[in-house]
Amino acid sequence: MYSGESCWDGMQKALNFADNQVLRKYGFVHPSAVDPSLQPLPFNYPVVS
Image (cartoon, rainbow, N blue to C red; front, top):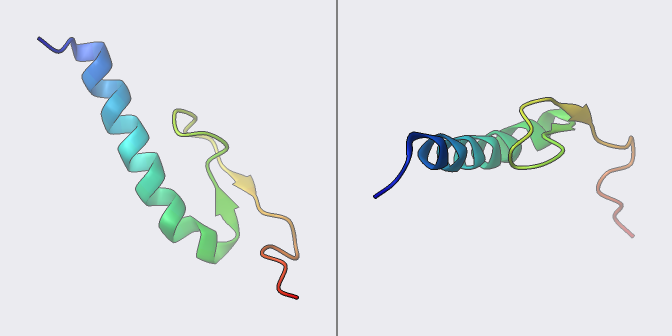
């Protein structure tokens, strides 16, 4: 049986992962799967050599 807490954590991780797929194109990411805050990517991300 799932608890409400573990279900919420799983949904939060899934949504943050999906957000990162879109936000990367705009220069932002979530620092971790469970952290809803945003942080900017470095200016030269990704480095292409």
